[in-house]
Image (cartoon, rainbow, N blue to C red; front, side, top):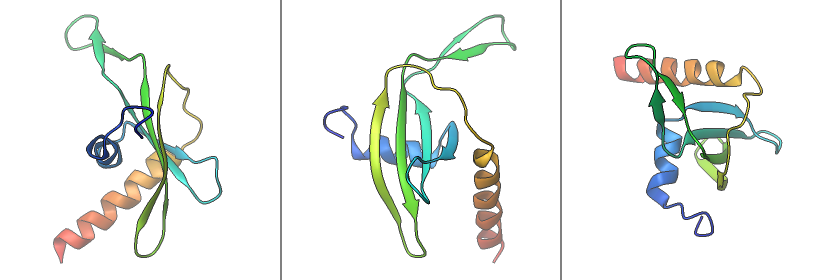
Length: 102
């Protein structure tokens, strides 16, 4: 993390508010991404977001804990690979709502 100038709080921020979630390269892992800084351009109401770097965190969930495997800063913009993001976010949201109602 020090090599990429990432603090522990920045890594936690990526985990709590990711822009994208994908399958990790290692087995049974997920990776979350958040842009380093977002720039908006275009007419008001139809602004397009762009960024020049991304912060990625790869982790593995177990029954009791979430283990961070790696965190890095990517100097560019990556393409989305799969639909895991939507499915994972839906599951987490549903679990959160179930716990909140109890």
